[in-house]
Image 1 (cartoon, one colour):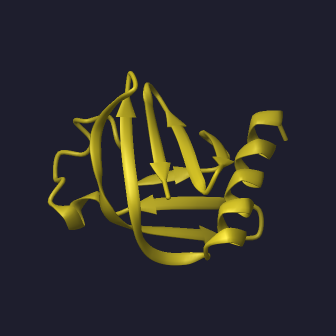
Image 2 (cartoon, helix red, strand yellow):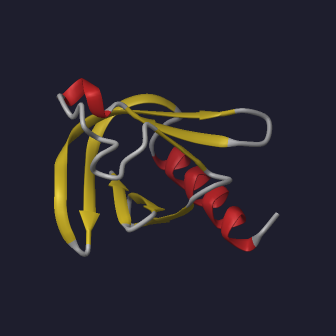
Length: 102
C-alpha cells in the first residue's frame, strides 16, 4: 500500500473515532484555490468494507444537481484520493478541490 493510501485510511479512522461511522448530517466546505464554493450541512455516509473506506456525500439532497460540473463526485474512495484529518476536520483532496468534512 502506498504511503498516501495509508494516510487516507488513517485519516478516516481518526475521523470515525472522533465522530461515527455511518450516516450523519454535518458541515461540508468545498474549496477551490482557497475560495469557498459550497459551505452547508450535507448528508455524509462513511462506510467500510474489509479493506476499504468510502465517503459518500449526498450533494443532491441540498439541491446541488450539477455537482459533477463543479468537479465533485458522489463517492470518494480512500484508495483513490488523498485524505488528511486535523483539528476535527477530514480533508479530501480531489483534482483541484479540497473538501472539508467537520
